[in-house]
Image 1 (cartoon, rainbow, N blue to C red):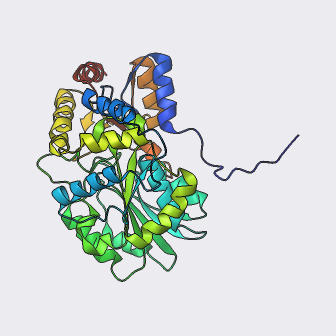
Image 2 (cartoon, rainbow, N blue to C red):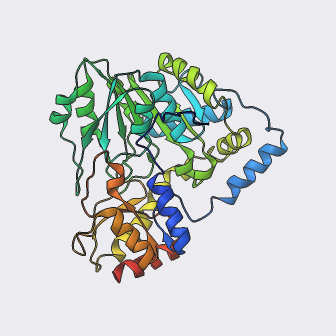
Image 3 (cartoon, rainbow, N blue to C red):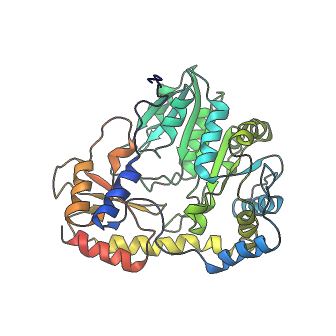
Length: 382
């Protein structure tokens, strides 16, 4: 029987991350494509999960998240950013950062609303906007510096503009928006009713002496923002899928209306384990140095290669310009590297709505040193 199922996302297929990881597995290639560590999380954190289970934390957590974890998060924001978060009214624990992003977009975007995003962009933004009838208005940023022209962004704002999405630090570019640029953003949105989604899942992974930034530190932005963060990136536990969203109380009440019918509540013992583990903030403060050393290992190791390493100010990604090697399109070259040289990467073009080939590939350096040294050997011989 033909049920004439009409796709709500007709232009969306299998993600590039799935494609490249499947190809890497098929070819038994070194996988620097998907953004996950190949090393284990701290055994002490795993022990905290077992302890939480043994204490009986095995039933539904509160819909908004375990109180102990929410209080721990609020305390961190006070210590790191000097901002006060109401752990009861302004914060909800979610099933990963992506679910928080989905829920925030579902809460705000209505048919015909326009949403400004900055490309290259994390691949869930656009499809989620379209799923709820919104129109994506992309701002295309180009290598090597991915600089934002805020005057141009201002020309895109009209009476239909409802939402803007930023990712800081940015995946896949590694660019960090500092105080000055966030100030420009605040000035741009002043006097409008445009809301902001700030994806800050890599907030603590910033390099070269920079300090973590958050829109929560700027009152003009905080009052209009949903801020999303993730413990997957923070604790090397991407498979746990635990994150959270912070927003003004009125926004959060609406956010929770969607959240309760989507996920309702999040893994209970892991919430208690994370709260116990992050009771000491020292771990968070050491994260930037941990990943900066890995960035430098890969970056320095490729100085004699034919790849040009683009700047990475944060996240755990580097972008490699291969224009000195070939003018092959990015997807084709990424496949060639996986099949012929046994190393998997991600074409930067996958993060743009329209075809944008710049001969740039993204690689993940959240890997063991041995993995990175092997990658260096392969890439230096291409």
